[in-house]
Image 1 (cartoon, one colour):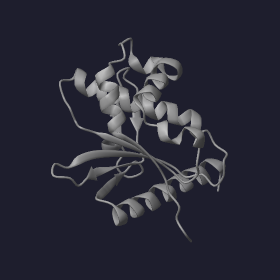
Image 2 (image 1 turned 120 degrees about the vertical axis):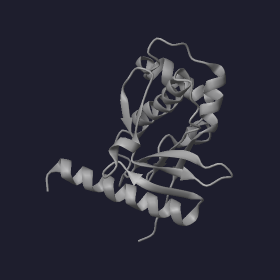
Image 3 (image 1 turned 30 degrees about the vertical axis):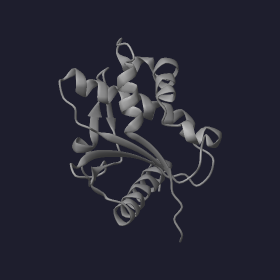
Length: 170
């Protein structure tokens, strides 16, 4: 198996494990994955860049809430989680801003689920409005497509983002 195929297989296995874990322990249903249903797992940012999420489904509430899940299945501290997380935050904000630009409010929520901790000293602040603003202004300003950061939208996105570490026994 080539290195690319190995990474792809690990990604598929990780997404499947997260799907099973969330569906069996929470009020979440994730019937779509990027490997079999790429169009419904793909969203567009303000700058027109398309982002694919590993899983898509809904949180069962009084009014079901769309949920897009990014899965990071690492075996060790290696990888680029810290860097990739900044993009995750920028994507969540600009996808929500794009919805608003189109006159929609899809009420989307975004989850980052990892099998290995990262940024542990900042864990409690990873989904804060301040952190999202930093992601946009310092790490991915291109995602704004020239738009100003909206403080109210930052708060909304911060409420709709989550970071979860999972521990799964063998």
